[in-house]
Amino acid sequence: MSITGTLIVQMIVFLLLVGFTMKFVWPPIAAALDERAVKIKEGLAAADKARADLAAADKRVEEELGKARAQTAQLLSDAERRSQAIVEEAKTRATEEGAKIVAAARAEAEQQTVKAREALREQVAALAVKGAEQILRKEVNAGVHAELLNRLKTEL
Image (cartoon, rainbow, N blue to C red; front, side):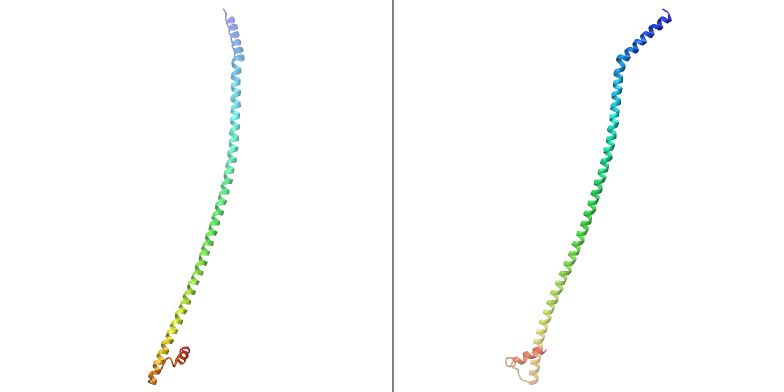
């Protein structure tokens, strides 16, 4: 056989191999490549959607954090105002209680003063009677001179 015959036989075998490959091997490979391309596109679309969802979730989280911070600030402000009101109320009560205690002490002191004055008047009257007795050198009868002694007490 000559080189031309070998070349022709090799070309026929090559063409048969190409034909067989185009008919039986290439379609499954092309289908697999197309399927893989579709899966890659779907994966990229899913990744884009996931990024968008993540961005939306981040935005919602930031909004919720902002709301929570605002609520916390409001609660702290309310608690501070309430504590100030409680302190003011306690001060007012303490002032009122102090005023009551001072008034009671003054009333008691006034009563003690009145009692002391009465006791002093009694003692002065007794001393005056004793002094008058000694001046007059005779005994004064308290029952007989009660009106005089009462007038002396009121004058003192």
